[in-house]
Length: 322
Image (cartoon, rainbow, N blue to C red):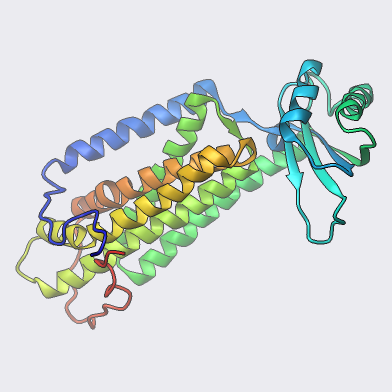
């Protein structure tokens, strides 16, 4: 007996209220932009500048103990992560401690570093600090520009890829869905003031890939059905295609969410922001593949070119459940 989250043959009418879904998406996009402009993002050390301290000890790193010892110093945003490397000795335990730049300073003052080292000596006797590195605001500004450029380039490459593989209407729909996902992800980080660092940029790029994969699966089936059902109008073909791939879409999203929720609950503070971004990205990416990309394609229309050979490569497993 196979697990099936969606029955084998569904007949949902996804486009009965497609204008409403586009309107809802537009409202949330506007709210996300307004939130980002007014409230801004809670940038982490990567983007605000600060100091990174490498700490080594012969006893295992206790992140919670380190954090409890440092918090009374009132240093603001602090990130503590244990570093793993196969080349480390059995008694070599390394932690990376990152402290945000203090108000009006390029980096953390040397006396603050000395106080921090002193309190860690109390909780981990014999601890050493082989390196202390500072990141100034100028470098942080360059990181913000590079991160934004990476996201823009990713979307531009997707636009070109979809345009070459399908028609321009498909490309516009796919890129519209990706922009929708990214703006809503940035918006929720702004609204909830969750720390925004380089790990979140990695999550955004991963969301682009995940959402694109979902959209391409649907669009492949749409193109196939446009050739197969020449008398059906576009909304009927889109509905049929989404229903045929719905089982695959739901199963992929649910299994991905199960893994991400486990990481969110058990993974600790170090990766929680990244995992939260991925959970949100999977949800909005699944939504946008159906209601944003396909609705945009319905609004733009698509030319049916019957001179092109039928190509079903990659579609034969679209409606298979695990």
